[in-house]
Length: 537
Image (cartoon, rainbow, N blue to C red; front, side):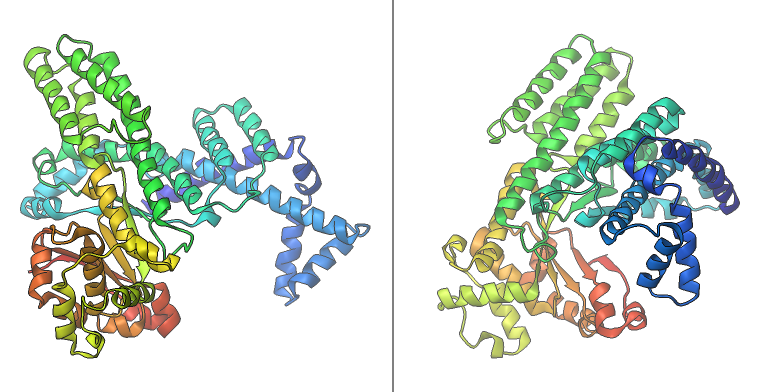
């Protein structure tokens, strides 16, 4: 297989790159004309200079002396800037070529692959093993915010169109798109906001993950239909932009609220477009009327940003099930596969699309909790953190009362406390899966988790069932080494055990890598870094 991949990559990417790069070099673009021919010479000068132990400044100065001796300092800087512009666009070209060739290189489209898997399962008597795996297996893809890696929206659109043009072998269109790429700026004049970062990722949700998840579920249903109805978490999506306060201090409650609304509206647009396509085929009596009704419901939701006309998920699924029954009983199951593909997506994504994960550092949470205790001294004893750990946990898990999070003057304390209320808001608007995880960065042990539980009770849930998963992220070497002991102490608390019983007896634990590396070094961090996500007993 590796030989096939290597050969295919050379044929479909490397050789095609030579063709498309030659097109790029003929374009009437300032950056190309001034740098394209000199770039190989610059690369050679850098390689030789590095081998000789020259500094970057010495390498560049020698290059200019050999090839551009008459340039002023300002002209040299301008030339180097154009080199960067040229290389940036070459990277987009490579990305488009790799994307266009991906399926062929990895044989994604071969229908025989699944047949081979089923044959191996049968011959090796693995039916019971695959049954257990598919009943419990789940993949959670989490989109995080790294804005420095994002192409601006205009560049992303060109890259997508270029990929399609390459797939079709449309050289003329590819040349025009390369020229458009050369004239389109890659930089932003303004720093993207936390909301902008989230919006950049919603493009991937609607254009990549929505169709890909549907294709995966369809394939799994075709090959293993007996398991698909049992596993509701085969594929789920997590979303950190708009919720990750530890990663971006500019994220606020209002950001989280706006991102949740955008996720729902993006998904509703996907549903609306797919339903339109389904209606073109399911034009039968009894069926068309139901689909028209659902079409109107989705349109009304998209036309009312305030959420007053949001579609009820259970009703939406119920009506689609009625259509399925009509197709089977009265219309010979014509185009049933198109409807069922849509049904699987609706059951997978609900009206939330991706779960917004709230993340905050334990020290920030601790500061907000101290402010809460100071403002409400009667809730817990003043010497709480001087008591034995087991007693601290009991008091924190059993605390009762009500706190107005909006009354705190410090903006960081207020946002930390109010973030629990916005989780509950999102659950009411988008469904429980819309936001159900609070991740504690730099978690030091069970007391940090108990603080989050207590704040959730005091600032939002009261004594209602707590529809929240508290996720410790152990990061330092010391915390990683004691993670097992910390979780065991937590499980010994009856109140927390009762909470886990309402969360399908599942506890997610995140084990951090980067801070562990900084704290104890690469080898130490890897030595003590297992992965843990299991059902509790």
